[in-house]
Image 1: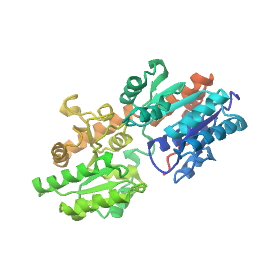
Image 2: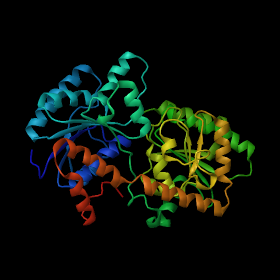
Image 3: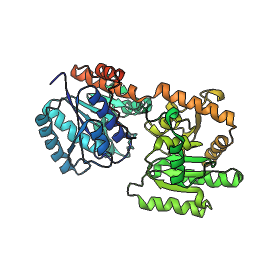
Image 4: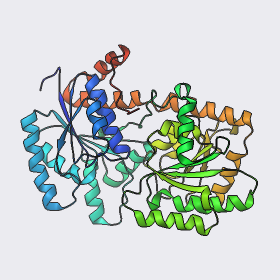
Length: 411
């Protein structure tokens, strides 16, 4: 290993959208700023340019497959890649390619790290066996205390091998102090929402467990119970090929008389402006969020959050009764409970200007103090340092303090 420039290989199936993909790019930027070589084996996707701009090198491999024969073939491909490129450490971020990465790392005697990004449902022994690869790292990174508990309870992974590293918000990109009014106006214009109309925002890919149907049910009740409240609901997120589900959501909104008040806008490029525009951001997931970056990003931009009380949101959203009303940054509601969601939406939309300002300030301060991108990057590099005997975390700090840091978040 070249101690002054170790080579780190991350494994991610594709680079289209999602928290795991963005985390991979963020760590590429941290490695580049620390003087390391950052490789990413992937099939590529819309975020490929951002990865390369951050200082990473893409190795194109067919890693999205779940075919057992192809997974085994990918293990051989990765082993050859590790030897040819002088890879010092392998970091896997998704289950199917993690099996290939595990076998390749063991074959080549390289340290193996995994990040357990999702709650991963386990409906039987076969699914548990498939999922357990994410707990086989020499170090297993959990993105929340909730996830760490799952890892230990499901697989008996020793606590000494588990590191809790919360995902962080890019404090440069997500900074309400530097956000221009023009960007907010552009987002509203793209959505067709007037400047004085409150926006209810759900930012999540279109998949049933994210709870879009629950939100639409709640919005229908809100329209009946609070007929004088103005609002437009924006469902922002890719359908990722789930066109039938997208059509179902549109039909449901129309059938409930919501018409143009519920708008499915697809992918949004300027999420900081989107969150700053939102009067409230809703996380309606009916299955546990392993972390839920949306909750933190929204709070960083001053948007109060309504989230379901399962998974990690109780770690990121301050709500009663855990904190006093004057300390809260949002609301936590039971999953699948449209009535509770209506109550929280009513609270959020009827705040006075003073209450809204105070809540926004608390949310911004809470996210900035506890969930920074720099902290996530530094902690991840420290994991690499512990396995390799390098000083990447210290070099990252030095580079950042000298303002030479490469920021991977596309503007």
